[in-house]
Length: 416
Image: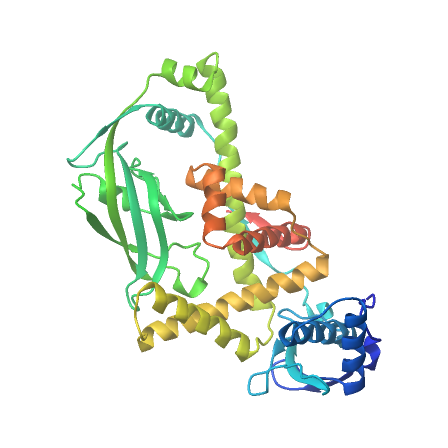
């Protein structure tokens, strides 16, 4: 690893590593007073006049960069301030010292993964599926009029939704101004990128008021494994309902600029196959990480779990304008935090092992995949993630896709 540029020789910094629990190291940094003075003098000589806060940030960066060089190990979460020790603070004429904690791991400790087996769905795009999609396109290009009676297949709703786990009252998913269409029996309702079986059947014949509550279960592909299949309530706040008069085939062809129905059906076939391939990837990734969670056995520092747990608690309390959480809610959320940080650590280790990078083109592709699953415009999906400050989530999803592709020659993928 290359040395960083610094106003001093960073090898003169005193750094002490001490092993503590859960693969954590206590790291004590000290820049002697004469080196602190030298840094300040060089900055001023260069016309840079830092205040105390800026000097603190600079000295911390110099220490962490040099600590990373000397660590000679990999880390998932990097150097963090050690609780119970004084915060770093620059004081003119004094030494600069503070204490950090850092987790460590080695890619050499990653076990043999050749025994991992996952199953992919084998879906053939037949004439029946193509016919259903043709009807869907006729509805997409159809004429909409406001509707207030019982719902039937093809009707469209604009809703805000919340999925709540029954035992804890924890909100797991939510969305605003989401468009959905009542589908034929057997086709799942897709909300927030997750498929809910049998909900379409519950909507048919229902006369929606301002709010509709439906009994369901947490989807089988939900990101937190321990919550999958749990009894839940899906609450739909209905904004509007439309009855759709389907367009004719000729109107659909004109809308898409296609010369004939044969070409339309061929295009639909390719589109459906691409959709199923994407769905298959999401299914494979969740199966893969379920398997990796069992095979890759390592400890997560409790401070990391507690930090994520506290962050999620604070977010929930603010969002719901509450002051405390029930014991059941806390148990559920601590389990979710354990699952989340373990998955994050697995991804980091495998990305490091295979030198996997995530670029802008991969994030754009992920946005298109999500938009295809939801039947939304990619630009709308991108704006959703940007406005909610969740672009990091997209990057993590891309990383998991990269892990799947990196392991395809190692693990066994069977046809279901």
